[in-house]
Length: 236
Image: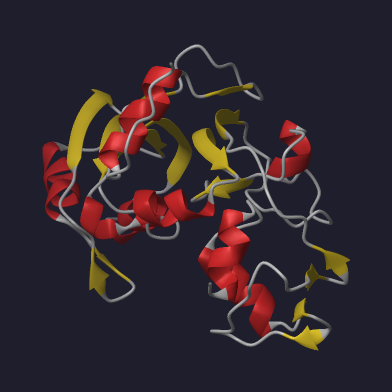
């Protein structure tokens, strides 16, 4: 199996993150520095930063209400990193991210393979946000957002928007580019004052206070599996 897939199966990180670690020279196979595309067998000793990777883990799927000020990173030296804030016993990592200045729902897991299935743009999985901007907006602003906005030379996909108040709106995306909503609003002459994610696919933040987390319910997990084309195991 490829080394990056091995990392996802052991619940260490996504394939993309594994490739980054390998490129930085932080991964070794039997004492030899790993290269992108290397394969490993059950007999191989794989280390990360000099520590042996233990094989086998129990899949974990949780949802977390990220407060403003928490950074979505697994880097332990970063103050208020999301992993330290949650304090889970398993080696989990976030699916996607939320900016430090944003709040709301984020999913975390030790199942690296499901990360790509959820984040792939072509799957069109919805993410819903509540947004406040720095001044009142008109219907033309909503129409331009919904049609797509040029961000860093590439148009955003059409999205669903609705007015909540003179300066507040709801926006539902089917893609997740870096700081996308903030950049969309900025391109139209508005500054985002607050951004709060309330839903990812069918999973909502309802019932979670800021800083709280819980395991996905069986129904939430089963619907997630079906949405990404996985089989759903039923209890005996």
